[in-house]
Length: 217
Image 1: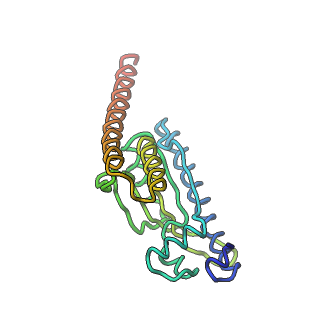
Image 2 (image 1 turned 135 degrees about the vertical axis):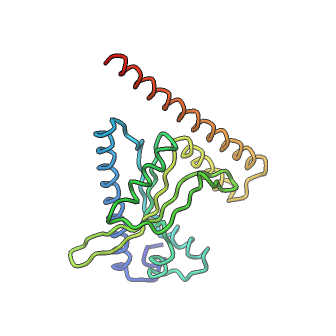
Image 3 (image 1 turned 45 degrees about the horizontal axis):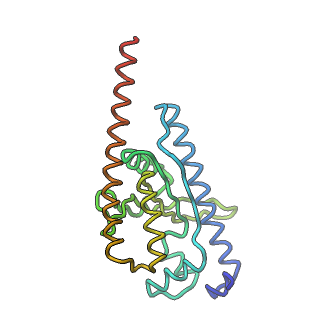
């Protein structure tokens, strides 16, 4: 099935929309690289471990519109699907998550539409991550478009857990046995303890380095 047959629209409209989403992700990636470089320069520390970006497939977009009871067309896609352009930012420590979110929110050309903090308020499954929906301007030859991007920020441990949950969800088509769901929630608690312990260890290392530097001086 082609893109145009799924959305029953002109191919030109589809391709222009996809150009905007891909361009928005490129612009976001450049911003993050600059922020990361600046942080390294000022603090000798990189808060970002890695960044992944993707644009939803037409099939996934169509399924999401169906779930929301919307007709499958380009207009509804642009209005109701906020995560067509998606970016996952993975960092080492939970403190980095809020630091990165704050840096993104303070960019004067980025507008934060919504925030969902699943770290302080995890989902019943145990899922933890920090979600932002933002708009970023994409400058074309004859106009400027504000394009929505979903940003997920999480630690490496949270990302590992979320990857496993995703595999289980599709393996059992969203209806995993109770014992698996229970074990998955238990793993989420273990991930939280690991993140807390790693943060404490990092802070202890930084304090030890500061004391050593003071002694040497």
